[in-house]
Image (spheres, rainbow, N blue to C red):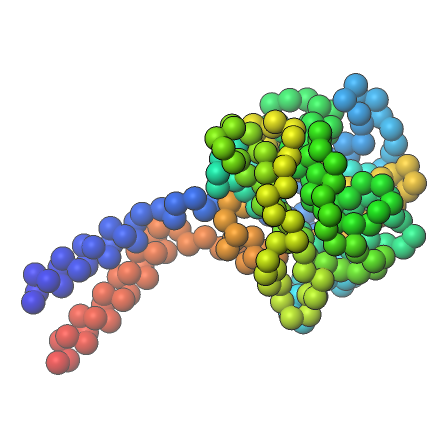
Length: 277
């Protein structure tokens, strides 16, 4: 029996020490960290089209998920951009983009978040050469998917002052080496927590042929001008992480040492139980 317990202990510790395959937080942002963004309202030639402050951390309470305030949020005014922790290459697993958003009346021009190409390119090039967008351009107010060379998909029409949760999955199909496909989910009932169910858009073709993503930008046109409110913005590699972050603003991945402590705790309880018998 002692040998069996020792073998069990070794197995538990080995499993606990293994990393969680495929799980990675590439970006996670709340309203308190608006300094992570820079103003990027320029075109591919570097021409500055407008002025703005990028984004400002606000402390009011437009976003309540499952009855819980998400705290400070970001008021974007001029397409501010932030970089991911690491550029990510296209794959079948892809990545998940999630955020809470609220448009403010009477601003209707643009809203949403776009994922842009690798940060090795200049900022003005990243601004225009994006891989995929979850949101809208123009006055449609319809949250859909779009790529740099593809028109917007159908989706969800958001009203001014309405708070919604958006989740998009961008990935590679057919081993193209690019982010060529997207799925879109929208939840307009934050009061009951975010549970996105079936996608509004599935298998949408993105024609930008972008192989690596390294940054993101928040849509808010300074020329009109307009303001978009955002919170719980995240880029992660699994749907589970995305839903956790949208609901709480926190994505927790246990470190191997934490998992080992949990395993040792469980083993101790087992040994104590065997000893009492």
